[in-house]
Image (cartoon, rainbow, N blue to C red; front, side, top):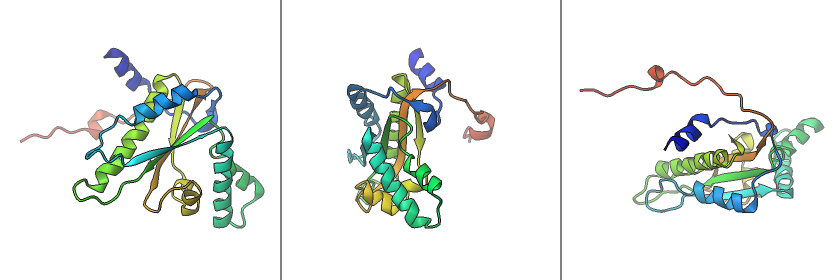
Length: 189
């Protein structure tokens, strides 16, 4: 049990630009995705799925992001467009966690959305357990319909996050965590 507690206690986010090759192998990617699926899923709906971006696929997706950016910001400078084109190109692996929550007669949509968030967090923790760094990012492009269409999402699907995974260039910069006295209360009668 101590190993799991240590793992959870040491997880930190790495900036995507600080993640480089090598990234996870094909077998490790399968393990990451398998672990990501081990989340609460009321009704066994599987209200999420994954899109894996590696190699040139990162740049193809970046082209879609740049196209949407140009459409939204027609006066953008070339360097701004190039910055957007590289959004998914820093880490060797990016996995989009897609929420496909929908109205259901029994299962609240909110529970389905939370399940997608849990899948994203399991993915981040699994990457840490395998010795990789990770960062869960959304950004404007996670909400842009043109980008979502280019990535093949259905009209009701949303990006829960783009999980960037790779080898960290150094230790993560930890941030202060809120004191428990400010975020936790005990209910009493």
